[in-house]
Image (cartoon, rainbow, N blue to C red; front, top):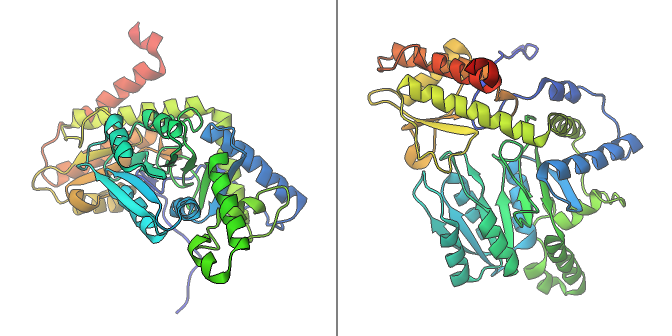
Length: 412
């Protein structure tokens, strides 16, 4: 069989991830390879750490990516700080909370799980009450659940954890650089994100940051491991070599102790994506995501379709739409992809087949994309016989943009 040169169609990607990569990031990916200990490459590593501190809004000494998808960063943090028998509280309100519980279990921790109905989040005081009851070593929570389109308030939980010497670990894979996230101000000890969502970089790295409270555990486990017999070490050592943060942080330190061969082109991409964020400004970037997320919601409501979940605690970068009665969720998505070149997402678990998930993240969070997805969805629903308010979605969205972009002119 003869294989042709790679030639893929251009898509408008409006899923909760991956999203469209910024063109400047794609150009960076074509930069020539240099060695991982080349002085210029080491300088890129330092610049990446500095830029990550800016995006995470932290003064933490440790800020670097783990090579792998966002799940690799979550596993690196949890595997590195959880020892057999450690109590870990995980408030679950969607699919990715369950993923955290699985990682805790595999690390040997005692998982204590809270469960909320999909579409709901927790009153922080309810989580605090559970913390008081369990007294865990770690509280691990998802900030923005792309499976339900909801966002969990964190500030009160973080303050209580810090006051009571409990580690607070947050999955910000779907939210960092798209919604407000203040690592230090919210007393988050470790936070993990991914490149393929609001950072607008291809999938392949899991940026993270952690403070001295986390590093003390890493160094203590390394010291214990060196001082114990072989049999005793098995209960104390970090179970993974690849995800051992105590070793990875040495690679990202001035000593550059080799742990793995850094993913050269992905580092180029991440560094450029972070540079673009700083150039835009973190507040301006968050405001942009908020604006386009609101425009999408307004357009969908004007179309006459029903959104899933209450407006309070809605995740601004993911909007979930209920499938109208009698309409095939999958057929609509396939038609939008095949006829319009636009991709939206289905759902998981109890929402599978019942909703569509539309992302407005990173480089995909643009006015033309919002108008395009609304037009395509309206046309596709009309084609399949759904009753929608024809033309209203785009008109309502255009009016919103006119006022949001030029408020003085619009009011005159």
